[in-house]
Amino acid sequence: MDTTETKNAIFPKGEHVPAAYFTGTAWLNMLVPHNPTFNTTVGNVVFEPGCRNNWHSHKGGQILICTDGEGYYQEKGKPIQLLRKGDVVQILPNLIHWHGATPTSEFTHIAIGPNAQMGAADWLEPVTDDEYNSYQP
Amino acid sequence: MDTTETKNAIFPKGEHVPAAYFTGTAWLNMLVPHNPTFNTTVGNVVFEPGCRNNWHSHKGGQILICTDGEGYYQEKGKPIQLLRKGDVVQILPNLIHWHGATPTSEFTHIAIGPNAQMGAADWLEPVTDDEYNSYQP
Image 1 (tube, helix red, strand yellow):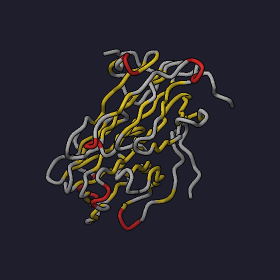
Image 2: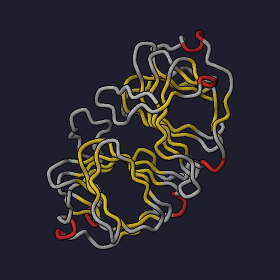
Image 3: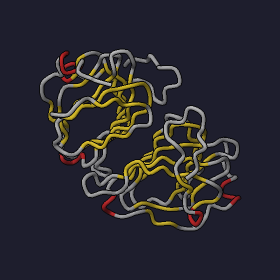
C-alpha cells in the first residue's frame, strides 16, 4: 500500500498494479470489486509519467472516466488519442487497446468494468517505446 | 443546458434534472447513456446546497462515486449518512433511498447504473424537510 497522495486527489493511490501487465509504475484502488449483484467493477488507477499498461481487451468492454492529468489511449491500428480530465472513453468488448500517462504528466482515471460476469481482462504484449512515442498532436 | 462550472470541476454541469423527482436544483451530465453493449449507465450529478432527490430505488442497484463537496445519503429506516469526496456508496437493487447535498455545501457524485437492462429508477415521494433535517453528526 502506497500512501503517497496527489494533491487534491479524490482517492488514495491504493496498491501497486501487477508489473507483468504494465510498463512503469501505476497504482490501483479497487472501489467496487467484482460481485454478482452489480456485475460491474470500479477501480481508480493512477499512472506515473511514462507508465502504460500492456495491449489488452475486455470481454465485457470498459469505460474510462478521466479525472486528473494527461493520458494516452490507443486502439489497435489507430493513432494515439490524448486524454484529459473530463474525457470519457467507451471501449467496446474485445477491442485491443492500451492506456496510460503521457511522458510528462501523471494520469488518473476511474475504470468501470461493465458485464464483469463475462470475465477479467485478456492481457497481451507490452506497448513498445516506438508505439508509446508515436503520439502526434 | 447550464454552462456554469464549479471551479476545478471534472465535468460541465449538464442539464437541469426533472423537477418532478428532486427538491431544489440539480444538474445531470449523462456520460454514458443506456446501451445494450455495456448495460451500465454513467452520469455526473451536481446538487446545489439543500437539494436532494425523492425517495427511490433501482432494479439493478446503483453505485455513487463522490467527487466534490458534502452530501447526504439515507436508506429507508436508517439514519442519514454524511458523504464526502472519495466516498463510494453501493446501493443494493430495490433498496429505497435518497441522496443529495448538505444544507451548506454543493455536492457532486458520479452515479453508475449497473444492470441497466433491468430498467430505470422507480421514483417515490419527496424527502420532507423533517426527514432532510434529521441528520445527526
